[in-house]
Length: 138
Image 1: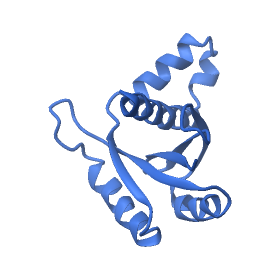
Image 2: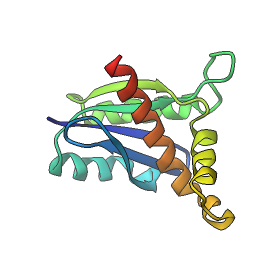
Image 3: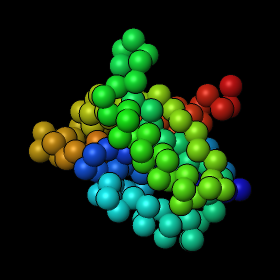
Image 4: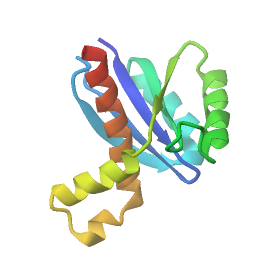
């Protein structure tokens, strides 16, 4: 079965997570500079079969798009131009960074490790993907 990939796109960094081949478990893959996202994905898609890509949709508490929404919308357009056959699923990414940070605390990471913003982005992408997998099952 093909994988599902999750992208937490940001101005500087992009966190990426992927499912196992059975689409049961989401795992952090990497964090990359956002400027290299398309090149990274071209390489990844050439090696792995991916059926869909989740891309975070930043919203405010009231459900309206956040200030970074237009930047991410630009990335989505760029992505679909490069990968027109790939299914894109937009998912609410509210609170994923806070949840990622809390999971770092809960797992006993030292303060120095928790300051690693790249790791937070990767964990955020993983949380988005695992939430999607959970909703898909029910």
